Length: 327
Ligand code: PMV
Image (cartoon, rainbow, N blue to C red; front, side, top):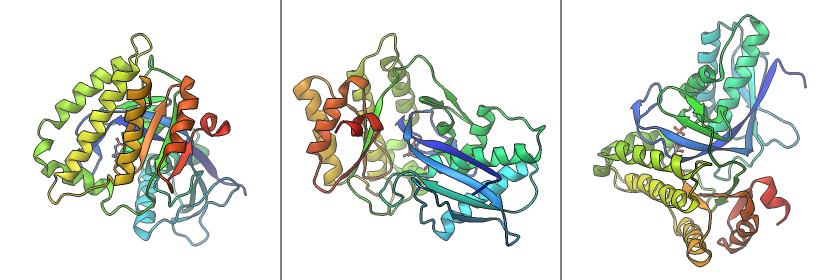
């Protein structure tokens, strides 16, 4: 099918988390975050002329891509961001916006970062096709993407992105070639969305001091991941502390809510045990959900495969190509 414009974008996993906002309308974060871009988990957005005179959303049907089952609310949020972008660049007309992911949509891998980043890029290509004189930097596109979905602003950079306030930026000089795995222990729909989590965490008594804690970890983590003075074990320890901090905020907010399950804890424990037994293991982190993300150095592929085999029965593991190829 020939599209007016199309773009792909990857998802990302934060090691220092964006949790809590300064402004809910514009997605300004309470603290800076750092993420690894998960190139193997991608979304694609394509734009066509509308046939009914309205902006609308539809499933993108192409080999290798799975369209999400977007709720009406999800579609409205997507189209609201599309309209914001059209207004920004003065794009006229009505369009059909198609989207899909290269991972199953109902398995608990968050697709908002990759899909909003892909929407921002596809809309930008549409705008350029209509108005060739327009100009925008990646930083400007990141700032716009942020307004649709906060964490999507980091997906415009790879492999590392740091997001302090209104846009994300690339970070150089850090370890490269990491391999990512996500252990999906639950595909149930989350009862508390991340937008709600951002609001609720501010009611936890542990929220006081959160910004300082996150800032300190960011500073230490940048050092632990730097090519010059990398300390993988310390990076693991900082990331563990950081996601546990975020989950403690969830579990002590008013009213409290919980994403961690026994199965997630058992995957975290497997990774911790690997560190104890072998002196080396993965970086472990969790988002606002029950699934567990692991990052490995390129020379740890064998360990990654072993850990996959030990994961709880019924969990689905989505690995970057180099890990899955030889498993
Ligand atoms: O971008 P949002 O509003 O879906 O928030 C993402 C929040 C976390 O995934 C929990 C952390 C992060 O920095 O990505």
